[in-house]
Length: 401
Image (cartoon, rainbow, N blue to C red; front, side, top):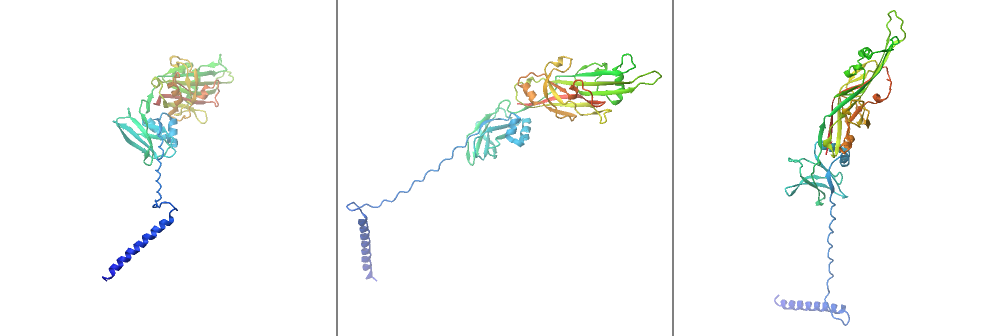
């Protein structure tokens, strides 16, 4: 074994020399003729391209408070009733615009003492663009709110709104400053062919109608048979009665029968002092009428019965200072129909009219009327006909910004 080690060493050295010689020969063979031999340079690796940054998320814009029923409908569509309830409760509700095509939602911040605090995260996508802001303990006064859009961990710049007067709604209830009715009585009288002048007094006709209930609601001012201007109480409607009585047979010669027809017509006017609403946006205005009693004819049209039905079927608009006069309530401009007449409490939407008044149009109040009562010279469809209402309490409730 000791004799073999030198031999192995010699062989290893010889093998290495032969390998180097072979590599050198290969390089010489591959070199260009007449040129200089160089070592091989490795191919450079390509530099990786940087990942492009996504475009910024567009920021919301035009942040403002809800100010109308149209805002509620646009923001929440079929759920506008929630927006309506929040308006009437004085809750601040913000709406905004957004041009983003893809979002996860919005974030709402409130600025407090130099810091921006997250108060809501909305995961409702780009629509609706709406947020109801819970009223803080100190109220909304002078608070500033900002809205951002977000997608994943990315968030847009913010759009800000600082609360100003009129951002939330207030509710005012007004009692009428003036109330007046004008009641007319159309009395052809009681015809008596055997009376010298052919007429008997109204009192005789009313006494014969008394058993039918005709005079239950008639104001006392009509007893004289003249039209009456009545302050403080609203009467609206139409009431008619017809009687026919045979002449008594007491041995004298009579021809024909006693008969007569009487009709009552009335309008009522209500004026409200709405000066404090000047230039305020009006969200809603509701006129409320409380029915004291109504007189209506029964199914067989031979008797008048009491109910809580409201006979006012439309409102007109006054055009003069009727409360300082005592004549007919006839100087009017068109108003609108009253759709609900089921009492004892009737509500009438008068939002557009009150908004017009708040915007500067002259206000002379509402004139309540009845279509049948307004027909000139109308004769009753039945021997007896009535829809005549006495009101006893009225008010106007306005929600405004």
